[in-house]
Image (cartoon, rainbow, N blue to C red; front, side):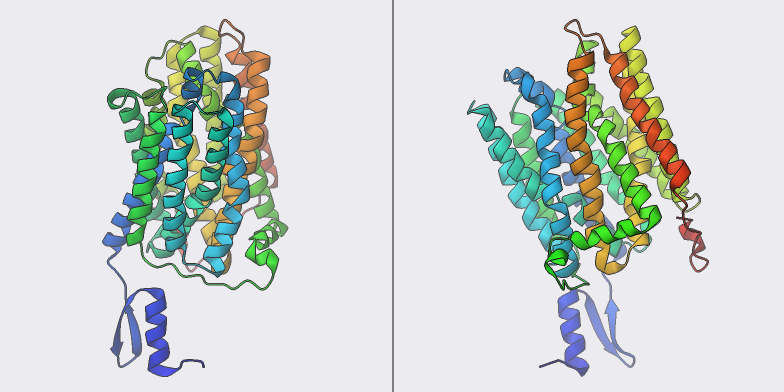
Length: 437
């Protein structure tokens, strides 16, 4: 039987998790303090960023210490494979079936257990396939996390364009702290123990998420395609969406080389603390987030994305110069610039999607972004970068210039595609502070 009147309002209040008061005008929501929501989101992002900060920059050297250098490319293919399977389904569940905050908390806690198991198998020197199998399980469970967290944040922040980069900054700080702890306190730059620290951080993210505001689903699936999140692909029928997702996918292919190969080049050039040095990218990311929070309301999305792509070409050019000259400083400068490139592209991308799609597709749109940027793109990138590494890098450590020049040329192609084919939309006259799309 359908509820009506005061009972219906009370049921709505119960489902939405807000605080309500009865007045002359009916039931009025009394939202939680914006400062409290901001702080809780920031804390979850902090631990969410800390988890990969412990193990991703160290993975190449961890596998090398275990005598598994030949498995590095496969290792960097595992998480993208997981991100191809689960983000769209996770986004569809958040749009249609389960509150996004609860889905994030449960999946993240389970992912923490899987991550601990994966690195535990490596420490016990089990057959390497155990590590890759359990890591795949982790990747599937963790795949929807970033998209779900963005959906939650942008649903509850009162000024998304200005506040979201500041909330997202928490993950960057978490990554930086993880890198420093890995190199200077835990000294696990080449130890599976880095994975245990990552699992602990992921578990804390899941526990902290229990305090996030309820984010109920706003849609309802009418077919199996909707349940699997395949409805998000209809976004590609619009020209700008198609160009945006295509460029994001293509950009993510050479971007995989940064995480996979930059730590190794640091070691070749004489770097002694690769995990801590890689965290320089996160320091620059912090500064970039302070800037992007302001410029996002003043400049077109297309402009911000083009800036990111152009700087990415320069960033790989710096590492190429380091390879040619043997000067470590050029490579470190490129690592520092990476944080700016990443922020201006992917933070802008998440806000862009939230503003361009209807509320019932937000989770699936973020899932499609994860599929392109963390799934299919990095998967092909791992294969390509592994092949380029075998082709260019010589036993004496030379060949880095050719490798980074090739990857930089691919990003230059992305710049041309976006510049030529993306049209954009004018700013909404009812919201002049939101900027143009």
